[in-house]
Image (cartoon, rainbow, N blue to C red; front, side, top):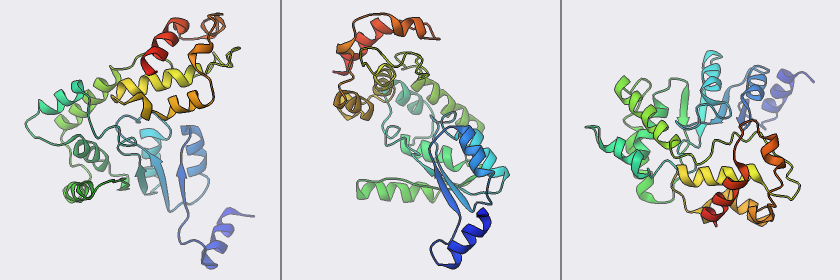
Length: 245
């Protein structure tokens, strides 16, 4: 069935009002989907740390060129950007205007003209009040170049906390002994980048629940022979597992 006819039938039946989609995946898939139909809206994960992840800035700008409004989810990266580690907070503290990490992150998002609205998860009434205050004061183009430069410095300060330059290519997998190498390295980096409690890290919980920990590593070296980044995987796995557990 023709997609336009399909959506029109759904609208006439009262099952939908608008043609929209929500997206988690690589940019190439996003481009294929968003250019396939005359969408009314799309929803993507986006924040100042995810500019090159999933749809990313490239996808956001494509939606803008197509005239498709964008709703943002994970604007605070699951709350990870709401509390800055010391080296990041030092950058925020050094500028004359005092704003919380939450406000900086939301202002950065709302500065983009392609963004129609930003979804925000709240756990407390005070957070709702803060969000309402922030969103009452923002608009496209709200940030100066100095402020945009600050946010790029903040992004680089986060990235400087990276433990290992694993790209998640998975050339090291499958490990013959069942170790989830990219899963462990992802958890290690995320805990370090965002100053998280390892017990709260989803990737680590999944590794542990599936019994894919570094304790199964026998240092066979198959992973290091396959790694295009030439990482010292065996040594790094042990360091990561010790810190995480």
